[in-house]
Length: 105
Image (cartoon, rainbow, N blue to C red; front, side):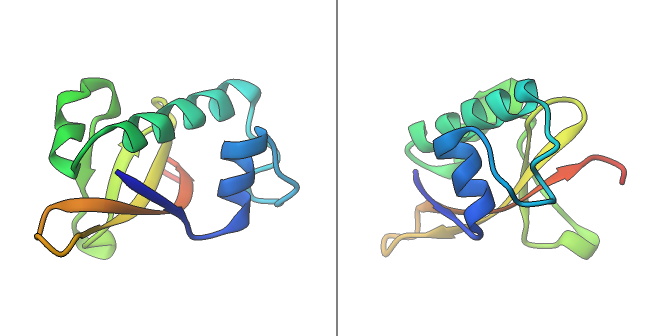
């Protein structure tokens, strides 16, 4: 799957394992390590539907206020939100990562 980052903080977390962005700099090393692992899972799949096969991600399409947003678990407390889009053949192979969210906050 093709991965893009909506902001530099998420890209820094993935490439460097840390960021100075106030929203994410307090994430524990375990959460960052798991985030990198989740992004690698997303990169490794050929299309969005393959995420259903990785049960630990708990992939879901959000509804309501977050309609159109995809989400996977980083751990039981944090979620990675992204937008997915198809290629020219209609198969969803692009992901724009935009937020790590603490669940229920």
